[in-house]
Each structure stands twice: as C-alpha cells, then as structure tokens.
Image (cartoon, rainbow, N blue to C red):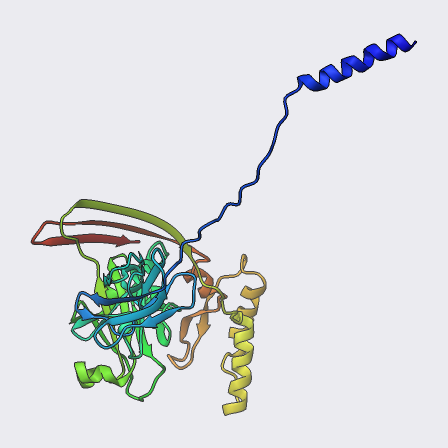
Length: 366
C-alpha cells in the first residue's frame, strides 16, 4: 500500500510542473470626450418680393427660437453644428436646414396647397387667406354629379346667407336673395357671369368653376347702387395653356317627384260646403236640389251615372237648359305624376396652346 501512494504523489508533482504559468497586468485607459461649442447663427429670410418679417426660426426639437426683424434678419444663440434649423411662416412652405457653421440665407416659397383657393372680388381675384370682407365662396365641384337642373338648385344650402327661391312654374328659374328681404320693392343681388350681368339660370351647372357671394356694403363701392343688395360672381370653366385637347362626357338619370300632395275635397263635400257658405251669406243655396241630386248620384256610382247632365236654367229662357258638370275628378292626380325621370347629358371640349385656350360645352336636360 505504501508503494502505490508514492507513485501517485510523484505523478501529481510532475503534472503540476508541466503546465505553463500566466501573469496578468492592468492598465488604466483614459476616455477623451470632445468639447461641444455653442455658436450663434445669423441669417436672412426672404420671399419672391423681399424680406419676410416675423418668420419663425427655431432649433428642431427644442424651444430655442426667434423671429425675423423688419429686414428679414435673425440671430439665434446656443446652436451646435449639425442642429436642424426650422424656418416657417404662414402661407409658405416650411424649410429645415442643417447648421454647418455658416450664415443661413433662405428664400421661402408660397404653399400652393394652402393658398390655391381664390375668391373673385370686383375686377380681380384675391386669395381667400388675405380676404377680410364678408364673402362666401363655393367650388364648382359641389355642383358636379348632382341631379340638378339649374344653378339655383345646386346653390341651395351650399352658400351661407344665400336664399334661393323656386316658383315651381314650368320653365321658371330660381331667384336669389342675400340675408333676407330688406326692401318692399325687392332685394335681388347683382349677378355677374365672368364679369357680365346675365340670368344665372341660363348657365349649365357643369360649366361653373366657382361661385362667390359678396355680402357687405363694400361691394357697392365697386359696382355702384346696383350692388346694394349684394353681388353674386360666377366664374365659368376654361381651357389651360399647353394642354392637349380633352373631351369629357357624362350622363345621368334621376327621378323627381313632389314630397307631399294636398288633399282636396270631393265633389259632394265641395257642394255641401258651398251651399252652407251661400246660405250664411245671401240666404240661398249655390247648388239647387237637381244639381245636388246629380252630384250625389255620380259620387256614389260613377259607373252608371254621367258626370254631365242637362240642367234646367230659366235664366236662359222659359224652358232653357244647359249642360252642367257634376263629376268628381281629382285634378291633382291627373296633372301631377308621383315621380318622373330627368335625363341629363353634358359634353365639353377643352385645351390650349402657348398663346390661347379654348373651352366649349353642350348640355341637354329632358
């Protein structure tokens, strides 16, 4: 047993001496952080007409900002290289410029999406953003794809304070009124189509580009006393320069009908009430007994009784007679249908070259 123990001990010592030894050393590392310097940014903001006064100049993501002075210049402190400078102004496209350490020169461009809506006033067009008068405007797209016959029907409810009245007579158009009736003799506004006074009911609604309504008294200073009750300015569509010829066609079918129908008395009710009124007025019946007999007979049995009978009339001669009607016809039902179709067809051709444009259209309504 002693012999075996000695051999194991020698083996352990030999193994320990055969492995290499390792040593470790630590070295201190110093991290250098570059110093960031704050600088002052200067620059000028302009547009197509010159310096922009009051434009906002701000470092993106911060509250550090200034506005331009009367000459469009600005000076902004505490700005680092690489910061994004945001320059904005109402009605212009916002620009973002990285700061490189040099002065910034910016020329702003108008935001066409925000300012493309224009209003016709007087002898020119004014951007709605710059307009301060009492003016309402509606785009011609409001009138498209609607079952309307004239411009008056399309304007109902689309323009504030514009009252549209329809008489209901066949072929009769609509009348316009701004802010209610203010005179006994009538208060219709002045209606101009492309600067020419004319009846708006003669215009195809599909050809209207925009409608502007001047409501205040300032319009009288442009158009005179005729515009005392307001002005309705209608601009029609036109061709565009450098545009190839375009042909557009649309057709529509709609069904119109009265919303309510009045209920009328039948012939028997009418004759009874007429006799009552005549008795209270002059003391005798309007329809005599023979007439009432035929009215009642036809009302109860129209198949076996004629609506016309020979009625004695001593006022003509001693044995005078005349044909008298005792029918019970519902003229509202006979003259007015429950609904009727309306067909509309429109075609227009537009285009233009470098010097001239053209637009022609044709509309048909049945």
